[in-house]
Image (cartoon, helix red, strand yellow):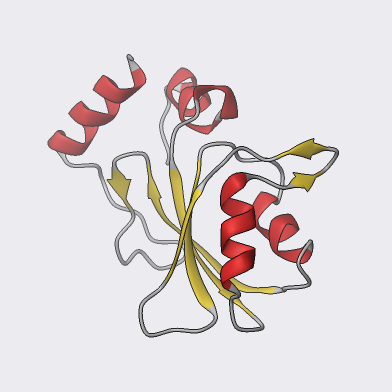
Length: 126
């Protein structure tokens, strides 16, 4: 997100506010159910346990899963996957809080709709 209001970005990005960020992750190997279960409960990386998160396998795939984080440690998804001997082939952020990024290509941007902006402001004021 691009704005001239730094306080908004801090509230969105800072893990202490626990706002959701959703990603689609493609791995080098098929996803094991035990891996998804364990990372959803939190695992030890960088000397601390990650917060619980929501994960689900993408339908009709074997190597792709969706993860919703509220934490955002440095390279958290890659480190979580590496802890189970997976390599991340592709990592795509698809949502930040209520804002779905849709089909934006690298380098593209779009304005938020009035509804998105209103809801975002409301969520940040809580």
